[in-house]
Amino acid sequence: MQIGLACDHGGFELKEELKAFLKSLGFKPIDMGTFNEESVDYPDFGVLVAEKVSRGDLEKGILVCGTGIGMSIVANKFPGTRAALANDLYSSRCSREHNDANILIVGGRIIGKELAKEIVKVWLETPFAGGRHKRRLEKIEALEKEKFKE
Image (tube, rainbow, N blue to C red; front, side, top):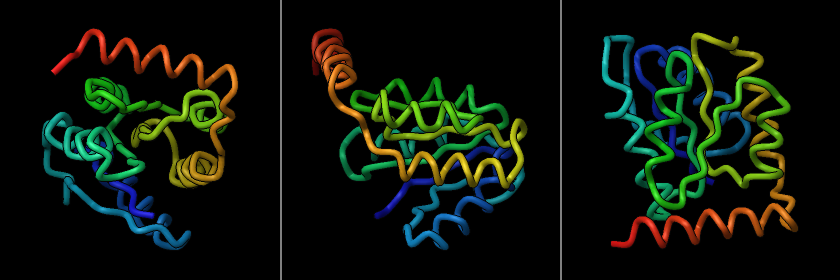
């Protein structure tokens, strides 16, 4: 599976670590930048992954910025994206199990590399539970269709 991957300067070091980790798990990370620690604007990179997930070009994406907050705001602007900031294992699991999150966001200045890898692993391995959670996501989808008609 291909996974979109992007960051700003605050997440560059962690993005590089996660890119290698994803490869070791057999995934194909599509690196959309940034490609060094020079200061950049997080919206310019968050949009690259969020657009592809929104359009269905990619099933999943991972975004990294300093805290994860900025990337979360950007990614959730796109219809069909369910971006979840998870800087702990419980949030990572619940984001998939309850919310069927298709974009994971982590804070490069908040968590360490090993915890980030565990968060990613849990996120990738946790299936969506469906049931009452599916009904809730359907309400969000209906809201998107109603409020953001093209």
